[in-house]
Length: 251
Ligand SMILES: [Zn+2]
Image (cartoon, rainbow, N blue to C red; front, side, top):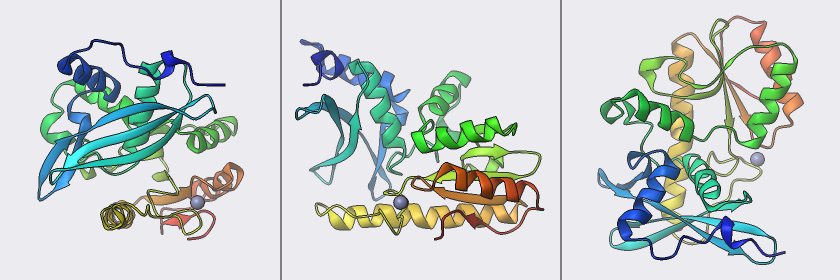
């Protein structure tokens, strides 16, 4: 089964500006497309969709220019019925990479509530392992907030937040957060990606430290962690006073 053209092919005859607007809509805004290209400079990224062999799926690639060189990063496969839905999904995946600079600069340019709302909706939320954990938590009768900053001025967004108990849960993608079992660095532009992933890991540890200092319990769950196991860690920490960062399924 080949992917339907509706799921990936751009409308013919679009101008450059129209193509850029299509990307802005999918990303939530033009600002959400900014990537760090080194030396304190920023570039605008786009997502390309191409049919992926005979699987009926669509391959999504993030591309931008850095130091005069075209960079391409395969985000993964998407399988929604329309191009616009797949572009949105691909931009959500791009949010997992740590390449987009939107979140950190939120305070400076996300001035309108509408911009902030679209940033929130664009972030890397609603990924599948996270959804499974959330539905288990919900079934347990636990109530929580989703994709929110435990401590607003720290500008770190946790996936699941229990405000009253001060417990913040992060579901880390194996690849981008350097899971010891599944993390691997692409052969192309190896140093670049190695730096990126190491940067994400450093930032994660800093987030753990900042939130712990602010009196929160931080729980880290790998995307490969069985949701029932993650649920158990959350349940235990809700029953305890705030303390050390916890990692479900080892570290
Ligand atoms: Zn893993």
